[in-house]
Image 1 (tube, rainbow, N blue to C red):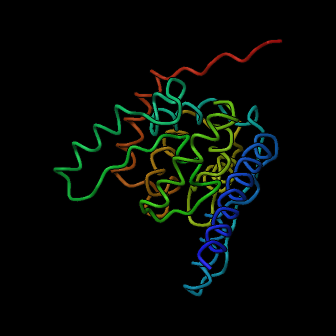
Image 2: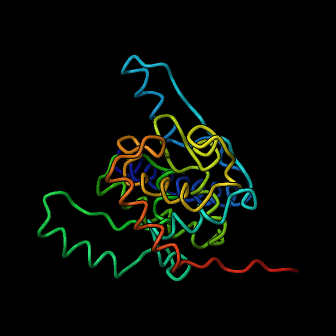
Length: 229
């Protein structure tokens, strides 16, 4: 029985690695139309006796304004184009700060958040963090930085039942992701730590303060030039 159980566990592990690698490779090219988080939020809405809401439109990288690209990098991960998935300096800083803070501060990079959004679930645990690290390594290995940012901008939660730059641009600013201004982009980025609590449509005084900070930080963010060939 023990041998059979061990063989079964071995097969499960092998299949997991094969399927996870295959899914990462496929999603390097295929649009991500639905994520586990979207499904979880729908279940939560039904549980709370609310009408299920899902606002999401996938758009190409070139149809997303450089303003929102720079805004999320300025807000979430300023070393995005330099690190390989993990910002060691921010991790060390968070560990030191969390010794004195009541509420822990995270240090997740855009790569880690993308891995979580696309392949996993939002509730934090050591097990999920382990899987998040694994998928972060995979997407950094098989995807370009541009692809990681592209998927992130299309899958990030931006409000109740709302995901991606295009949906929030349409429903909060009556525009498209390609036409988002610096001010609008900074306001969207300001909500990302908790988009269910903070709104880019009806920003609080705290949100406006965060927006101003991100606008200043955006001046330090430059995007790599696209290959003209």
